[in-house]
Length: 162
Image (tube, one colour):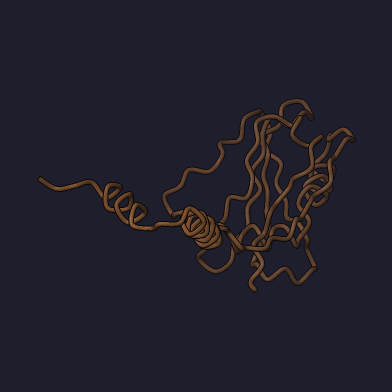
């Protein structure tokens, strides 16, 4: 019959005559285990700004998205997240109109395109999708069916290499 592992540890501890030795080993073990398990990854925090103005035109939505998603955050997000697989279903625009556009036009973004589209009914945005493309890679950065999210800033924790 096999003895459980903990009985071996207990037997080892019984061989020590000094309580002081047992405590020293216990403290050292806790320090070693804790030190090995601590995540030492450093991060930097990136924030987009909230948008509180009404969105009644494609240009308003472009400005809101550029405010919500600064270029540095888009780059960081796309470096941390795998591109969408080719068979991924993007947002289906809801509404009787479709607005679309690009962000950071005329800026060296390191992407082929950072683009968005939105479903609109009567100048009211129903939903939108923000995307980036580089070569054959495509990232779906954000999709939203509720514009109340614009009143909250986007927050991204980005790991930093040592």
